[in-house]
Image 1 (cartoon, rainbow, N blue to C red):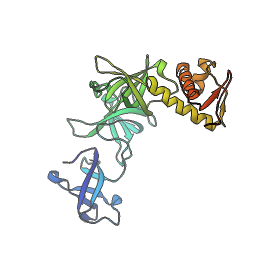
Image 2: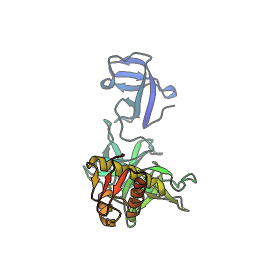
Image 3: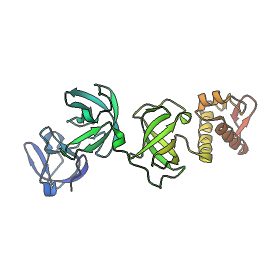
Image 4: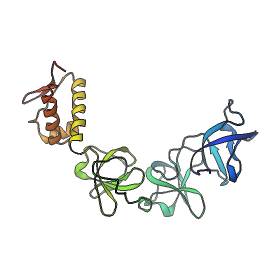
Length: 279
């Protein structure tokens, strides 16, 4: 079975002046254009190719690397527009179409947008939509507090940042959880704070509880080494200066400093911390 808009491993069955033909099973042979055929390829070889539709809506295979697959949420740049919609650069020869009906706002050339890639049921074409809520699903009960997840920044919300979680679910990072500037399209790790009744997820960008303290303790030790062994901070430093320098709360900072001090990794005074000679 061929997965349209995805990578497939297909066997070369013959060559022609146009390229190599690959075994597509029941749907017949699929052309891989000559520009993607390498000299060492022979009949019987299996190749990993991305299968999509060419300008004439025929199945075609390519060894180009796509920036998104069917079923993915991704941030892509608009290459050009016309009276039917916008066309996104997704790494392939033929751009990805976004109809006007699937745009939240009118898309502009050279701007980036977070979209969902799918197969239109009526036309069977691969298209993209910026109306993400139509394609985000409620999270399952497996998404419990503390679970690590992959996060794609979707955009701003009055309460913080809307995010796509694990390429499937709607999430929200509240403003007080945001320690640095994040732009739509950026990807990072996140941690489930709560699964709401509607299946949407509240997300923290920092590990919860002691896991966060342990992670920051390692970060602080590394930063001490890079700074030559001493940093002008202590548990008396202000919360504002700690957050500006390390992007953590003062509570997390004090807990990590206390842990490193008890392990005799650092020494501390009222004005600075330093790596001990035992380290």
